[in-house]
Image 1 (tube, rainbow, N blue to C red):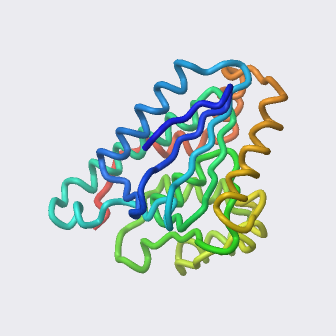
Image 2: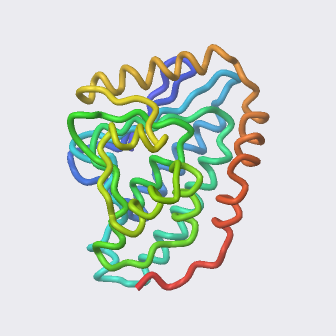
Image 3: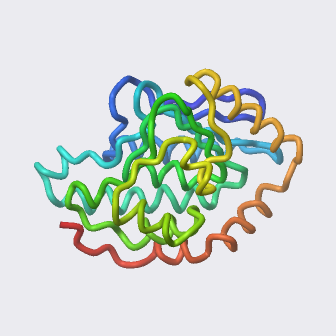
Length: 228
């Protein structure tokens, strides 16, 4: 991934035209970027996370998990640490989803405060039910905090419903949908500028976020169980 700074706006991009599978190396790179962001943050900083190419992120590296079953537990552990850091980041966060976001990639996007999405390509998809993986408790806890209704929770988790941008807006996951990657990023930056203008205290912002999502943070601390 790369990290670009435009004034008080940080843009973290998952680079390349691959699926941005969340293997240990990529997760470590994102966490290193968050560490730098935290060190350089000001009172009006904003983070935008996006992915180049067709995918925002297609979830865990399942080829790695197939060749080394212990790596799935490692990816779970590292992703939990990454999401914990996102929820503690002292600034508003925006996911600019310009391609598919599946499974752990969907969770990464939903762990941001706001999601803007490309409407002419891509979907949000919890694929675990279709690929035969047990979904972690904290994934479901996060879904329940970000999706409007129990019926929608069922469809996302138990039916593997693929949500378009318009469907995700109906469920309160996505705040706005746009044509093309460039327009989506433009709107994410525009939203970031609106939030920056509020000049909130980052420590207060992170504190309030922790309170709002306290059950998600509690679920992150639960012991990892077998997913196979």
